[in-house]
Image 1 (cartoon, rainbow, N blue to C red):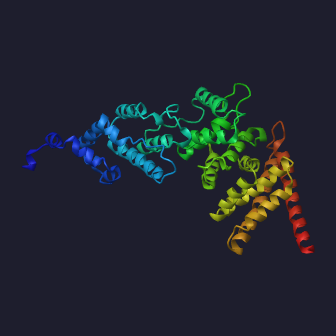
Image 2 (cartoon, rainbow, N blue to C red; image 1 turned 180 degrees about the vertical axis):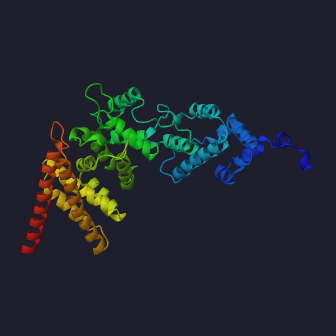
Image 3 (spheres, rainbow, N blue to C red; image 1 turned 120 degrees about the horizontal axis):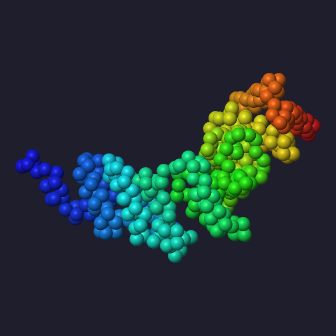
Length: 391
C-alpha cells in the first residue's frame, strides 16, 4: 500500500494541523531535520510558514516582558526559526530565497521595525530579528569595503547626525550604538564602527579604508574609534561585556585588512588604560607572547612619537607581567620583547642603508624615533629598578 502512494498523495494527507503541532516546539522540529528529507517536504514547510496561521504561530511577539528568563528563550526561538528557514530554502534559487526574505521583512511584527516599537528601551524585538536573520543566512551579503562609498557616507552622516549626535548624553549614545551594532555578526560590527567613526577624506568626506594599512596615522584619524570603544566599554553600555569589546577591537584591527601594528598601539593608547590593559592581558592569558611583545614595543614607539610619558608604557608592561601564571611565561615574554626591539631596529636600519627614502625621509625618522623609544623605555625600567632597590 505504501508503495502506491507518491509524494503528492502523501503530502495531501499531511494536513496543516500536523504542521501546527510540529511547530509548537520548533527546536525539536529542527533537531529532527525533517526539512532536509526532500525538496517536496521543505517546499510544503515554506508554504505553511508563509501562511497567516504559520507566521502567527512562529513569529512570537512577547518582546516586552520585564527582566525575565524567557528573554533568552525567545532569542533562542528566533535563532532556531532562522536555522529552520535556512534548511528549508537551502536548495532554492536566490530569487525565491529573496521572496521569502521580503515576506519576513514586511511582516506585521511592529517591533521588527525601527520606528514600530512604543518602548524600545525594554524591547528585544530588534535583537530577535537580528539572530533570526543570522540563522537564516538572509542577511544582506557584505560588499567589499569602499564599493558603496555614497551609501557608507549616508550611513555615517545619519548615525552621527541623528542617533549619535555630539550633544546626546552618553547613555543615549550607548543605547543607539548598541542597537546599530548588536544585531550583526562581529565582522559587520567592526565594519560599521569603522564606517561611522573611522577616518574620512578631507576632500569629499568618504571613508578612507586604506588609512590604517598604508602607513602610520595620527591621533585625529583614530580618536572617533577610540571614543566609540570607550563608550561600549563603559557602564552605560550594559549589553556589552569586556570580552565583547575586546573581540570587537581585535576584529577592527583587520578591517579591511591587517593594520600596521603602530596604528593598533595608538588606538589602544587612545582608548584608555582599562581597555588597553584588558586587551593586552587577554593576549597574555591566551599565550600570545610574541604578538603581545610587538604591541608593547610599538606602544613605546607611539609614546616616543606622540610625546606621552614613557613610564606609562613601562608600568603597563609591569601590570601585564603579573598576568602570567608562571615565571617561565614571564621570562619568555620579556625575551620576546627584547628580540622585537632588536629585530625592528635592524629592519629599520636596513631600510635606511638601502636608500629607501621618500620626500619626508620617513625611514631615517622612524629609526630616530625607534632608537630613542628603546633608550627611554629601558631608562624608565632602570629608574624603576633603582627606586625599588633603594627602598
